[in-house]
Length: 308
Image (cartoon, rainbow, N blue to C red; front, side, top):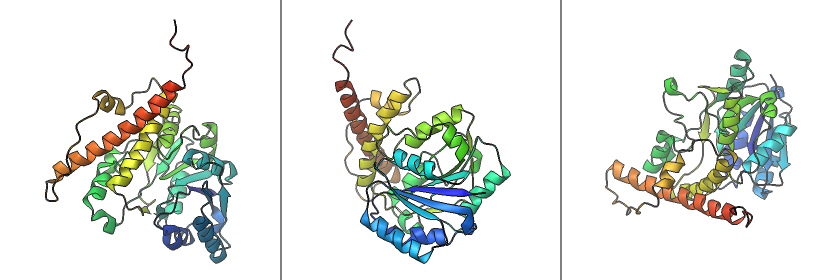
């Protein structure tokens, strides 16, 4: 089975592409002539280009392409790569996920056993133990707050209609039939969820692939997550406009209005106190982003829209 691994590059804050990322593809157990890597860089980062060039020099027998996208949006980058992809199976991988040696083989093996066009495979992206020493990082991962599903959770409760582009595989014919990702999403948020809505409505379902493991090299912090949640709030407004009849979980939070900000707990406060503080900060950031996007969309309405 020919496989195309698609990665949309983000600013390489932790320089892991120079140390781990490309080396992880060199170490794949799947035959080198059976897969290709397509990396899309919408920001034309010189460090990414240099790391890619060094990788190509070390590993000329592995098919790899660096595309310069015209947009930094993840949806646009993934679509660009999918058009260029030569494989019948697409694996979407987050750029801060270093694939374990058996990741490509695990995805390909799953689809070989399950040729159903509607099937998608989902792998893990787990923080290394040194990052999990931080309580906030452990809480985000174990609660499912990072990706919307508990990738360390029991398989018995796996959400069958869950799709995300962190570590997922789907047949190219199915992806193309659905028209790819909606490029109206400006950030790395809700674009894969929205695709998942259309995919599930068309009969799509996902299964967890235990062998498709990746290491999530991302030093998450509360400040970084709050900035992400602002962007997620903005993207949520896009999702709401595209699917106005869909029940969206954040509406209850918005209807409660702004909640009083909790003070920063003392260092020795119990875990539940810190979790309440984290949740409040993240909800407030999401609300700010959503309301800002809502105000912009309302300001763009024609002046006669409410007339009559």
